[in-house]
Length: 108
Length: 120
Image (cartoon, rainbow over all chains, first blue to last red):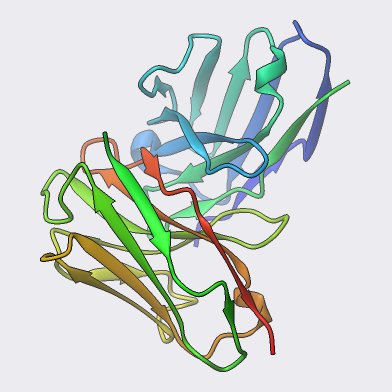
């Protein structure tokens, strides 16, 4: 199984700052089949990014994804109050599908 | 507009079988553009893929659950179900039914989730 390690576990930022979230895979993820999801308390996750860098439908361009191989990044250019949530990365290249443990983005 | 709705008991006793159903509206579980499946999330923890199927056919499961899990499809009701046998407290989680387009393969739709607790 591909193990995904997300860092940091908790990211404390002020509104307007740039957020950089990391996801490292235990082996190379072919075809960059990595997705990022946002999850707010009591809600289901929401797809933000797929194929490492493609924004999902209706996702604003303040969210961007990058990376290849084993290292992937989600960037929020300027964090807004509604962006404080937990972010999960996922790989769907190698079975079984696996998720990272999540990064909590909290208000500083 | 696609809707996925999970239903089933919120409490299951240890060693018994957890059974959930996902009712799909706004699409068909036989649509060849999508995989359908289940993901779970223990309280305060990360997400875990359980398994999925395609076109109402064979299902694929997480190896750690493969001996205890089964996903079945009722095309007449446009539903699919999850059965997990011999449950323990470690199976306590919010269970989500999900859809994955074949084209992008990431999960584009999630049900609202249902909490299942395993306790005597």
